[in-house]
Length: 205
Image (cartoon, rainbow, N blue to C red; front, side):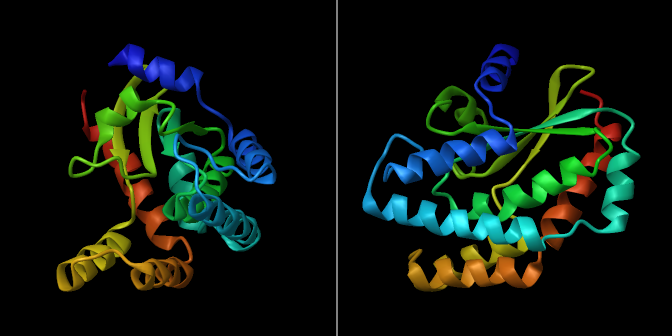
C-alpha cells in the first residue's frame, strides 16, 4: 500500500498546476481522463467557470481555520479528481482555501483518477470509482490515516433519495445537486473534514 501511495504522490499536482493542466487541455478541446467526448469537454468548461467563481466567493469560517491551525501533526490531502467531475469542481476550491489558511498544517495535492487506477481502486465507493476522494496522509508517519468523499452527507442523501425514487441519475438531479452546493456555501465540506481531522488523534494506526 505504501508504494501505491508513494506513486500517486509522485504523480500528483499542486492546485495551481491542476487548474493549469485542465485549462490547457480545455483550450485544445479536451478533458482529463481516458475517455474523451463533447459532453465531458462541456462539463469541464462548466467546471472551470464554477471554480473561478468559487475561488472568489468561498470563505473558510474562523472556527474551521482555528481548528486546522491547532492540528498536532502535518498532513497531505491527496485528492483523486478529474476536470470533468462536477463534485470535484465544487469541492476543490474549498479544500484549497482550507489548506492555504491551515498555517502549513495541510498540503493539498491532486492526482488524476484514470492515470492512477491502482490507487483509485483502494478507495472505491460501493464498488465504483466515485470522485473526488480526499486521502489524508500523515506527513510525519508517512501513512494514510483516513479518507473522505466523494460528497458531503447532505449531497449524498440528495442523490441517494432521488435515485431511490426515480431509478436514474438524470440532468434534473445534476442541476439540483449544483443548487445544493450553491446553497451550502462550502460549509458541509469544511465541517465534515475538520471533524475527521480532529478525530485522527484517536485513531492509532
